[in-house]
Amino acid sequence: MVAMVMIAAICAFVPLCISGCGPNDEQLIKESITKELDTLKAPTKESLQELMGSEIESNSAYQQISSYGVDYYDFMAHMLEHYDYKIGDINIDGDSATAEVTISNVDVYGISNQVTSNYMNSKSQYEFLSMYQSGGYAALYKDLFNQIEEAIDTATDIKDTEINITLTKYNDTWMVDASNGYSILKAAVGGSYSGSN
Image (cartoon, rainbow, N blue to C red; front, side):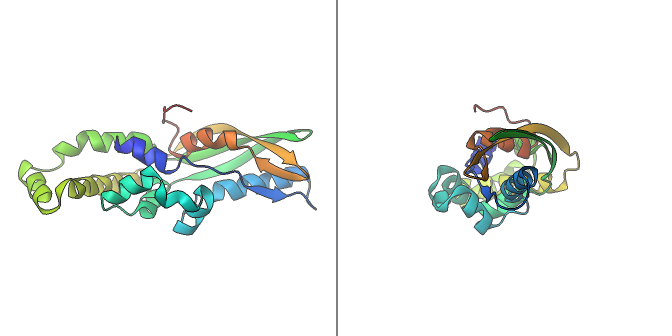
């Protein structure tokens, strides 16, 4: 359940674009992809709001995570601590293009599942009872998220996921297609997310 909330937190992609005046198409395509993917590198409150829209704080993932006493934007930064990417070959066919991109990160989804599964063994019953009495379920969830963040931060097994990003040219402007959102998301969390498209 925690993993699903975590995935939903970065699920809303909006296409970003670069105006097509001056550089050649390949350079414009690289700039468009870079602008989109850089939003996930060392994300800030401002960059995430730009990516997901001003209504980000009204979505269910934000509200659920915040209800646990967890800072949504800080948690997102932990999720993407090891995220990086490389743009490879680009194939242009008229007003359509496909770029080969390698996205790297630790297996965020797998780590969160493992920590969640092992959570009840991480403390004594007395410690859990004490936390619950002092802060209710919110205290337990906050402690769980803290453990997930620590596990992500200290993970060293980086996974590379190869994806194809498609773009379309509109009036000399190359735009990353919105349909790429799921594959970018899946790769950004280590490539193991198996939710529906």
